[in-house]
Length: 413
Image (cartoon, rainbow, N blue to C red):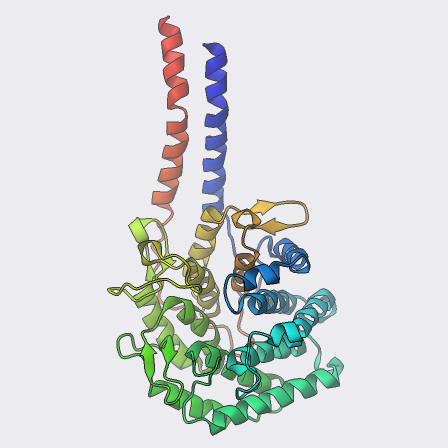
């Protein structure tokens, strides 16, 4: 009986350890806000770089059409974010890695999924994200030390983007032939604002015209930018959705902070939920509407998109909503199963490096153009952790029930 009790005690002890670690992950700060480096993100980026060298981009491409591109773009952007938190003399690694990622986006492999016949070439998705990273590379460099060729390429690409918007009857350019998503144009216009922040301003009229067109074409159900639009008119073709809104809310403050705050509050009201009362998460469809998942949203248990939830962390941080950003980060630490080594950190047992790329990019979020935002009214219950902590404690207690029963039986004998 003693041997049996010892055998039962081993898994009980492991479950107790798991529960205690879970409680710690719910409580310990998991993000650093817009100023401090998030815990473990440097090791996470080292892991990502090794995975990209080992083919993680190709693996992501097999999952969705922009997988290769996003894996490299988000890695480069997260390196920029971490570098901007360092003094200028401490940015060498961030600059080197961001340049490496940018070169990958501009390579034949980076443009392969997109059409060169679009305006701008390869579509607004590729043009916008690539241009944002170009600006990030310049932002890492002191003005007097910027590479003239990089300044020239950023200026030329921004001018081409602005010309495409100025010539368009709709604020939303095509990402693929005959297909347009507002989120892609939002990133592109943010890159024009970044140009005017880093270099002599040139694109105020383009930005103002774009905003005017956006306000005339909001999704009538939610009052937000729609998920998909008619490529010819920009009229809403699909209701606002969490996967695109989470990115839109990350970039819109760089374009117009006032409009962005109103949009963010609408988004937070319509999409941020607490399924089963177990912590904040983000729906793919607005409250009261359900729909199918896709390659962007992933499965939708209880209507929640894990990808939208991760990216909303960054949007909340840019908006100064530290209460929501912190809660989402802590929840991710619990359910993401981070594994640490002395040199790396990976989530979900390292099964989805593209997920690590989105998470690192979200945790390092900070404004590049606009000033840090004032916090909006908090909506996260300060006691949101309590049900999860109670469940973890209950799990630890239940794990010892068989051991206690065996002990009691042994005493009776």
